[in-house]
Image (cartoon, rainbow, N blue to C red):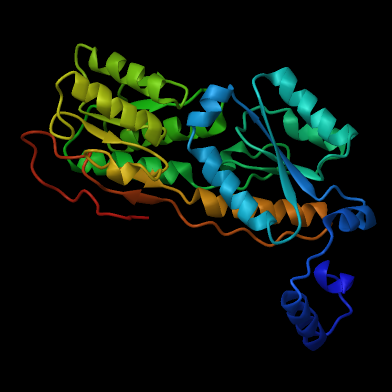
Length: 332
């Protein structure tokens, strides 16, 4: 029976099916403690998030990613150990504790930076890991699992240009993160490809409060933008509120684009135009890959859904501009 539940060979398909059916009829499950002892594994994966607790609680990415990870772990006898830390020293200490106390078998590594010394640190500690982030974070032979952020931002800029906008600003995330850099670079490169001058940019921290402040800063300029592309939906929704507090209409006076397509995005007024990425499936793929690495197997190739550009009511034509093809809902 242990061969079946540990995915080991030597059991025919017919016998395997009978064993699984009998286990289901008896509501029998493998003992996680016994499996851990026999395999000398903790049967747990670690996730250290370096954020102040207040910022962690407001970032919609992490709950969705964790949900995807948990959905992949629940059926294979692994648990997730989450640590939220507020500084670099605390993060390094958490990895050391994971390794020295054999608390986890591997870890997820997010918020990638260039350069990033954490992959080499985890190798020294003997902890298998999966990098979670855009391909641009590839460094030293490490290949991240991630989505094409740049394609979504470029599509957003093209959409705004098709609506007649030429003064397109950007509100980004912290510059130390690779995904912040990737989104900002895609925005700047698409503007250049379209023959437009680079608009103003304000770097924030992915929170609603920072998004509102950045929006006020942009709108206080002598020549304010007519459209803003935000690095996440939370900042975009807060920016929309800030603009309306100043008496501006969205999208008549200001078009707004977010990134992530959080569950709230279709229900704000007006509904938010945004870039959609399947974070839950992303979490599942990372979990499956890390489990394979921990168990000494070759991970299956990862094929994540392409990002989509979702057009809703927060973007519109510049007053006086002629209609043109601006893209439709759910455009890859």
